Image (tube, rainbow, N blue to C red; front, side, top):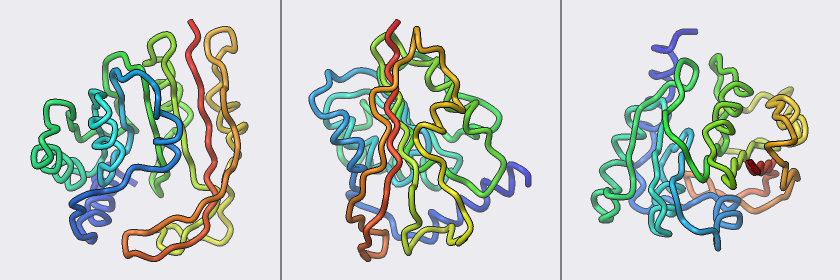
Length: 208
């Protein structure tokens, strides 16, 4: 399918949701980043913007990208309304064809899943290469399907964090896996429903 199809799909997903006045950050982000010195962060697939806004409040300068113009325009407006526009830069980007330039102290990719063609290993390798020494790449994937997920395929298989790390194939002399596990939590969906879900969490640090 074409980029036009992907843009239309994700614009439709976000346009169908009510605008979030105070989107929540992902739990795996807050538990990982709390206590780290703020720097430059890249939020891949920023969605409703909860992660970007939370990072900005902690003093990070965030580049937030998404394939959906609806998502990035809403986030830009939210950042302005919360007085965080000097810490949040939004950009519509198709990671299938390009990767945001620059060097970062943190790159986060939460639930970067799509029904369209996306070479995730290449995207995540580019993310690792964009890290400055000491920087971290946080990849959080679905380990189970929530009732509100757009993907309810009963046959879907979720790669483990170690499998994701193997696909990225980073030399251990320069990048170190600091976390690779599958914790469970109670999640709340866009419609307010709650369910127990599994996250696949991968944290990689650039050591040199």
